[in-house]
Length: 117
Image 1: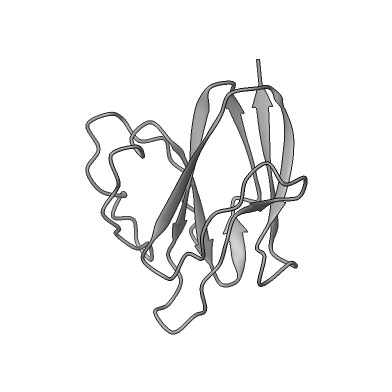
Image 2: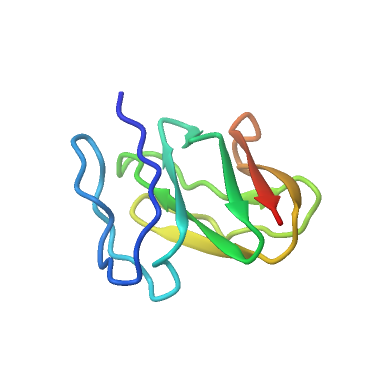
């Protein structure tokens, strides 16, 4: 299994075309993001570390028949809308800290964003 985690340059227009990975059009706020893939009822990778002020984008690369997922902070700092396959959500993290999160409809799906100075 290939796990994709990437940092897109400001010139990136689509996600990398890696074997077994999906291609999604990226919204204007995505370039420069650290990417977390949603697939097989899991966040890949489950933990990422970024600098304060960095952004994270969750890309739902699940099969089209898989249900929608969310990225929801355990402490309530954010909650994405439902993300059907083929959609994304981006959030900026302005302050240092550790931010555990889960999928609201599937709470066994968990991850952590670690934000350094």
